Length: 313
Ligand SMILES: [Zn+2]
Ligand SMILES: [Zn+2]
Image 1: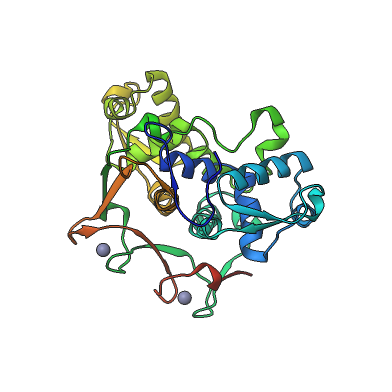
Image 2 (image 1 turned 45 degrees about the vertical axis):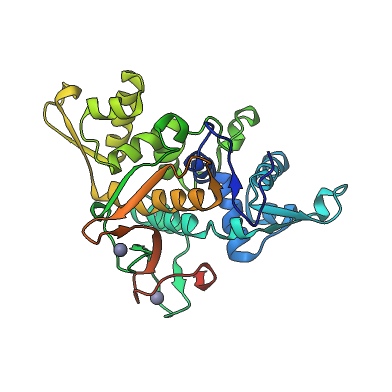
């Protein structure tokens, strides 16, 4: 199915929901890197991406094809000459900037060795270096994760939320796994169960049995992901270390700091992929009695950020 670039797609009933599409984009490292250069530098041609990314032609063209299908890019130019085609970001593609900025900031702060590899971000509005802060689109205030409550809407459920296919093409071999710019983000949302587990943690799951009940996943899958998240320092465990059924798992500061990435991805998905039954997730600003939507704020001046006002330095 081709998705229209400048208006929302209407999804088939009962299939992958909006969040599955969003995870499909946010979990693929090459997709994020291609987007980053398109957003930041206006990169549009195959050879211009290849000048800045260590990506093979096969991997790059397969990603551009998939991103075009999803409506992120609009190819312009002669189809018979791949090198002459320009891939223009659609409104849908341009609207992905909050995901890129959030992942970038989180990796630079929390993943070892990433701060040196990723340039800092400057807000043109105030001229200062900044990190994005999650704010509420309704009231404009900064919002910590505990103030956001979420519940499944009509098209929501974990099986429909965990994508069956991401942008990653396994048949392309290990070369397609990416150059390692966003290693920890990929560990958190890079496959269907990880993303769902993280979502369940944000929605309040604390115990093994709660994760299992919410995801309907095999116990071995739950145990494996809990171990991975613990090793990454995203969840901390208390209770009996030898009895996972008696332990309590809580998000750490590092885990909570990833919340803007997840929320930005969900926001994009639900803005551009509409399920006929209604949204997959519905959010509220706790204590403020209104709906929550994502607004990124500048940590230096507190103003709402716009993608065109952000520069890498
Ligand atoms: Zn609010
Ligand atoms: Zn600012």
